[in-house]
Amino acid sequence: MDRLAPAGRLPRSLLVLGGTSGIALAVARRLIARRTRTVWLAGRPSPALEEAAAHLRSLGAEVRTVAFDALDPASHDAALGKVFAEGPVDMALLAFGVHGDQAYDEREPLNAVRVAQTNYTGAVSAGLVVARELQNQGHGSLVVLSSVAAERARRTDFIYGSSKAGLDTFTQGLGDALYGTGVHVMVVRPGFVRSPATAGRAAEPLSSTPEEVASAVELGLRRRSENVWVPGRLRLAAGVLRHLPRALYRRLPL
Image (tube, rainbow, N blue to C red):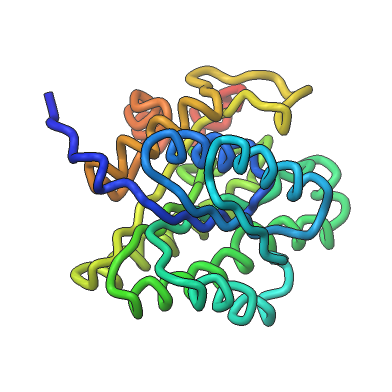
């Protein structure tokens, strides 16, 4: 059995990009229970963002909000630079994204473009800004929420999946670029996550909850992992599907 690194490997300060994400808030709660004392929630100003901040404050953390819009890359440098100007950030969690509606988005290409711009273009911009700031301070972790949908295109969600595939590849390359700088980059690939955000969608095999994703993130941080699958056995299932002949893959109800 692997021996876990001490809690000192967990962050004292946390920046969440996508401050109303259910998964991100589950991660924040778990880290606050362990070691985190300062949290920045970045997102579009809204009552939901303020409610999320108030909830985390009730757990004992100092929480501040910052206006952040994934679809406005020109503003990312100033918005995120403001956070790092306040002091070191031990961990940044990139958790924003939209799933879209595959059938509708196929008929309305501008909606498909919005999914791609949010999940990929916005993440590239924000990820590079955060990576630069972490490198400048000489330490920290960048944790990026990808998806098992990034592994292979599925008929039912290939617009979303393609945007996550781009994000996944970008993050892996960024991790290679930052190797040896003191900055740790970790890709998290959950399967279907049962949460209010997915209410109404049919559950899929090997699904998980936000709390289970948060537990896997903590374990990944302690182990200094580069890739985390949630649940862990999803890695094997994805590997099998990745190598299925295309003619057979098309027949699967995916």
